[in-house]
Amino acid sequence: MNYSTIGKLRHDWQRQEVEVLFKLPFNELLFRAQTVHRAFFDPAAVQVSSLLSIKTGSCPEDCAYCPQSAYHDTGLGGEELLEVRQVLEAAQAARAAGVSRFCMGAAWRNPGDEDLNRVEAMIREVKALGMETCMTLGMLNPEQAGRLQAAGLDYYNHNLDTSPEFYGTVITTRTYQDRLDTLRHVRDAGIKVCCGGILGMGEQRKDRIGLLLQLANMEQHPDSVPVNLLVQVEGTPLDGVEPLDPLEFVRCIAVARIMMPVSLVRLSAGRESMSDEFQALCFLAGANSVFYGDKLLTTTNAETGGDDDLFRRLGMQRMEPVDSGREATASGEINYRGCRSS
Ligand code: SAM
Ligand code: DTB
Ligand code: SF4
Image 1 (cartoon, helix red, strand yellow):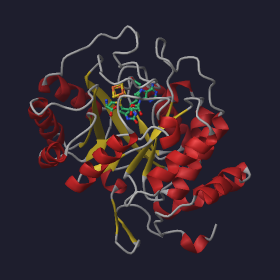
Image 2 (cartoon, helix red, strand yellow):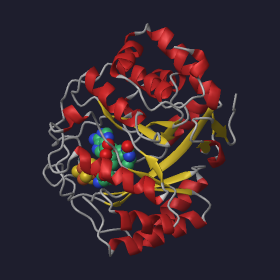
Image 3 (cartoon, rainbow, N blue to C red):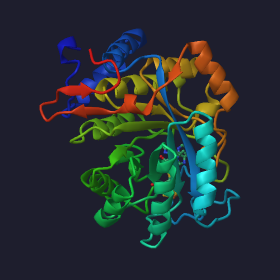
Image 4 (cartoon, rainbow, N blue to C red):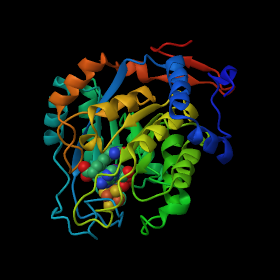
């Protein structure tokens, strides 16, 4: 790696150079990722988000990993969209637990225009608590993205999930291009993009590289990159798939950090099955965000008591919202707000 390139955002990554990164000796790869990480972030700071499922189950999509798909019998019933008051109560509890960003997810293919009225109220109420807001509601058209932006939404989560080549074996009811289109509408509306994927679905390294290339070669890197480790759920087609080697997962985090130096890289679903040492390696590789709270959307998360203990033992502190802000100019120079800039 040419260290003089640290500080430049690149959008022209070639498959071959990413393969070279993956093949580096583990210690060399982690050293490089650490070097990049420290150029832009305090390595002891971790951004903390929490999740709430605002509309659970009976989803019309067939995502093979997901317990909420109506195609799979996972014992989850379909629920109605929560009331604003219920969402507010959950957000207040998260704020009291020191969470800075509140993420709300709905098991929809896309939101209906009527649903958005209530969703907009949720955004306003949660923002009024002084928290950052994130929504993941499925596909959006440009008008819907504009409405969410006007309501004050900070982030929209919409994952590419895997490489374009592997995608068709996981989801058939919506295309890769549909996802790219939604991401474009979100970006054009001026909402920050949260976009990542899932590892451990039986994909090969070339697919993990394919996903990272898609993310890092976007015109603007996603502001936040959730890296999920598949949570295997009984009744889903991916239950029982060969688990991913933890060191390969750590390599992916390191390569994501190198390719997207100023993005928050979130250690997302799957932490419950990871040892403390596995998670510590992920933080060393450049992960600097987690979902905190006893529940993800429908499955259990790592326990908060264990997380508090882990952060204390690792000497990590929670990042203030301002620390995750950054501005990259057209020339690729970065003006970093709140975090270390050299
Ligand atoms: N329905 C919306 C959509 O798919 O865009 C939003 C909610 S969906 C549950 C959000 C993301 O959660 C998915 O894109 C996927 O990456 C992740 N996810 C779902 N089930 C998972 C699982 N079992 N393990 C890991 N990640 C999962
Ligand atoms: C993301 O990438 N991971 C989160 C969030 N975005 C919405 C969801 C994880 C879901 C895990 C399975 C469940 O709890 O239902
Ligand atoms: Fe539905 Fe989202 Fe689950 Fe796919 S990932 S089945 S779209 S809730």
